[in-house]
Image (cartoon, rainbow, N blue to C red; front, side, top):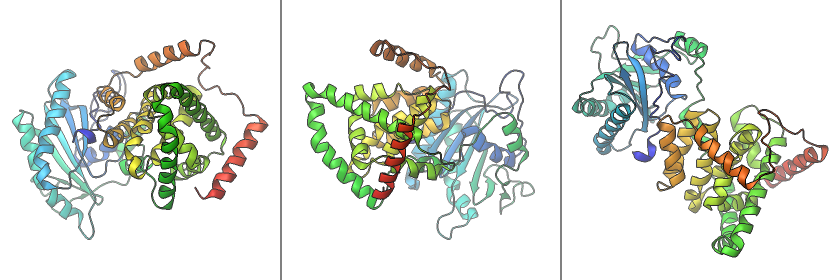
Length: 422
């Protein structure tokens, strides 16, 4: 469960009845349907196959900390998951200022095979009951427990069939409810579904994955001895960073693609297998990775994030653990640029790749505890200034326009990559 823990959000900026600021707009929820509508805005994405718990504080029902974990496939694991989730959310709330006065629970899972949404609700009822018992054991009541499946919702708490019928209540179409309009007005953003965000970071499959694993084997045979040799380690680091910068520039110069899957395919085509292998293995060195972490703002952030996502997708087969480095960097850039939901997902995936990856552990904890990333950004800036004393930080949003040579090189690389079938 620890590796899947993702969304223990400490701030109240997405609460139901609390304002985004003292004088800002408030969003008030009055029914289970409105709670269900609000869930993606509380998390920043549509949860799939997820147990979500939200702390509630005060008489007005102000939302506080949030926690998301995957629903274990084995019912034998449900009791321990319920206990740990309740303990984690309540202890986290206490550390941040106060024990919750209640908890709202969501169980989100789509039907399997010919299973109906109502059958999903019935199958997950024992999990809902275990969560209620676990919260009750810590003297925090579950105010509402909802199952969301197949476009409908059911309440495990309300016995009144007039408002919570046995066949469930239909959810409003995405983006059409009063809640969606209010959330949009308040500046709350949904970044797609959990599955969609994870798919942009998940390993490639099929023939391309086999080719990539072979490239990693070749690169490891040539590169790892150099990394282990102190006399050539610095040289490898310089080569890795130079290659990463060259690829980032190539990515920046490529024609834009609007839809995410197309953009990812385009980025994959811009990076050769040998290049990806060299970068993945080079980033296993902590010092190289720490320098790469400096590319977290201004004009460097967007191409760096695209590069880290592309490299995470290339960590295939026996090299799955190697994804911890690019996933952590992707999580860090996302967090640094204000996309906390994606940051938590990427960092959670990094810990699934390697539960002992210390950088991911630290960032995951800091992000979940609501620590301002500016402190780490400032440390990285200072380190970069010491290493590059002549470097001046460009003003936000300024970039050097690409030269004709740059644009020609990008087009040639794109054509070569497309021709190789990557």
